[in-house]
Amino acid sequence: MSRKAVRSRGVAVLGSTGSIGTTALRVIARQPGRFHVAALTAFANASLLASQECATKPSFVGLVSPNGVVAPANWRLGVSSLVEAATRDDVDIVLNAVVGAAGLDATLAALEAGKRVALANKETLVVAGELAAAACARGGGEIVPVDSEHSAILQCLGRRDRTDVRRLIITASGGPFRTWSAEAIGAATLADALRHPTWSMGRKITIDSATLANKALEVIEAHFLFGLPYESIEIVVHPQSVVHSMVEFVDGSVLAQMGAPSMELPVLYALTHPERVADDGVPPFDPVAHSPLTFERVRLADFPALRLGLEAARAGGAAPAVFNAANEQSVALFLEGRMSFADIAAGIDAALARLGAMSGKDKDSLLAADAAARAFVAARAEHC
Ligand code: NAD
Ligand code: MG
Image (cartoon, rainbow, N blue to C red; front, side, top):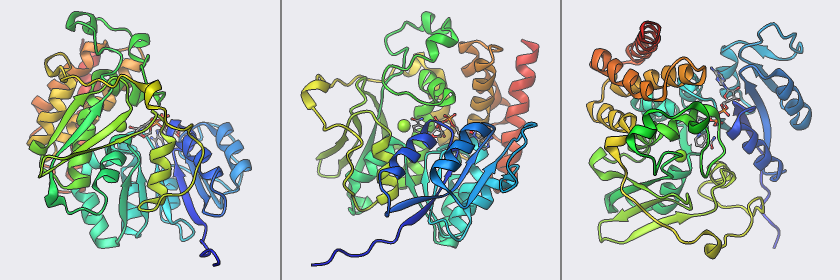
C-alpha cells in the first residue's frame, strides 16, 4: 500500500532567536517534507537571525528593531513585520514565540487569516482571550498551545466532550524559591531568581516562574483555551516537572500527561495535533530515573504575584491585561537591577488597585489599560 503523500506545511516562527524559537527550529529541522520554515522574525538579534535564514531558507525574514544594524535588503524591518509574517499565503502555521503582549497583533491577525497558531505567547490570551476567540470564529483560525501544561491538558482531553471534565490540575515546578521562607524570598537577588531548577527558558518567563506569576498567566490561558470556569482550574506544585498537567473527569478518573521536561515535545505536538509523528529528539522516558514524583500545595500567601494574578483573572475586564502589563514592566525593571524582587508583586498590586477596573470592552480599551499599567509601574519605580 502506498503512503499518503503529505504536503509540507509552511511555518512562520515569530521570535525565532529566543528559547522557544530556537527549539522550534530544531524540531522542524527533524521533520523535512512535513514542515518547512516559511518565515522568521526576531526582535534585535540580527546575526543569529541571519544564520537562521541561511540554514532554513525562508521566503520572509523580519527584524522588529534594527537598532542601527544594516540589514540585508530582502528583510522587512519594524513591528509590522510580525503581522506580515503571520498572514502570508505560504504560511500554514504561525508559531508565536514572541515574549509579552508584543505578540498580540500577530496572533489576532493569524487567527483572522484562518491560520493555526501554535501559541507559546501566553500573554496574548491573558490580555485579550475574548478577542482571540472572536478572531478564531470570524477567520476560521485555531489556537494549539505550546505551553507544556496546556499541551498536556489538550492531549488528556483528546476528543472528549468538555462536559465530561470536572477539573483541570495545572502543575507548577514551584520555581527556585519553592522551599525558601517568605523573608528569604523577599531578599532574593536576580541571580537567585534566574536559577530555575528544571527548565531552561528566556529571562522573562524565568522570573515569572520565580514569582509564580507564570502560573496565574497559565490559569488564564487555560480558561480561554478550554472554556472552563476559574473554579474548575487548580494548581499543584510538582517539583520534578514530569507530570505536565492533569484532567479530572466527572466520574473521578484522572488522566495525566508525562514526559521529560523538554519543550521539544509540546512544540512538535502543537504542529502535528491531533496527529502524532515519529520523532527521536527526546530520549526514551525512564520513569525510574525521574522518581520519586511528588506533589505539594501551592504557598499562595508567600507568592503574592500568583494571588494577584488569580484575583485579576476572576475580576475580568481589563484586570488581566493590567496584571500582565504591570508584571512585564516590573520584570523588565528587575532584570535591569532597578527594582527588588519583592517590588515586582508590590508594583502589580498597586497597578491593579489603581487601574484594575478600567474598561476591557474592546482592543483599544485593553491596549489603553496595558499602556497605563506600564507607565504607572515605571513612574512608581522612579519615586521609590
Ligand atoms: P525569549 O526571551 O527567549 O525569546 C523571545 C523572542 O521574542 C526572541 O526571539 C525575541 O527576539 C522576540 N521578541 C522579544 N521582544 C519582542 C518584541 N517586542 N517584538 C517582537 N519580537 C520580540 O523568550 P522565550 O522563553 O522563548 O518565551 C517566548 C514565549 O513563550 C513567552 O510568552 C513565554 O511565556 C512562552 N513560553 C516559553 C517557554 C520556555 O520554555 N521558554 C515555555 C512555555 C511558554
Ligand atoms: Mg508552562
